[in-house]
Length: 235
Image (cartoon, rainbow, N blue to C red; front, top):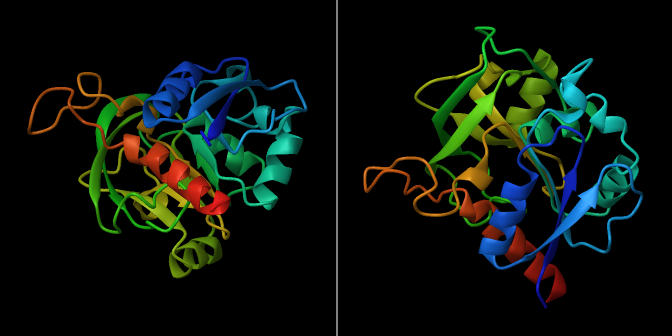
């Protein structure tokens, strides 16, 4: 059975079509969902895409976290559905308290766009099982409010429980504490990160590598991981 992965579009979403394309390239069926609905259309997994939902008013992701469909997202998360929040989607997950901490303006107060090196810290999640812990990957990054913050107790708990999914290496682009680029929840099914794996899934359109310009496909493993995790559930 082909996995069906929903991508929720919010007013101001920019990367929803890119996420749908990444899902299709991985061999799953992308399902377009709308922020104002209360229907997940029976999907097996969810992606909250990047962009500037509701214009990033108040705080990035704050209004989207209260969108009608987020009630269903929270219920699905509690039941173990794989959910990936990318950039603005990560901000939504934090604002909805599905992941801890907060995301604030980049330390240098500027929007940043670059191919970012990451280290995979946790390869046991629904979205990272195709990696090995310690893998170094390159994923495009583009954000203005990507600085991850949390209190000392929360940081200590995240580190101690292995819930840092990705860490910036080479350079910390936005001032995130502990170089945190992405997190996972306690169950291992909800992952959020600031870089954009959906922009690194197809040769000729990804980040540069030593092999060739725009040949990076590290992001494809995120979607391969979700499909593999779903296959285990069905089995």
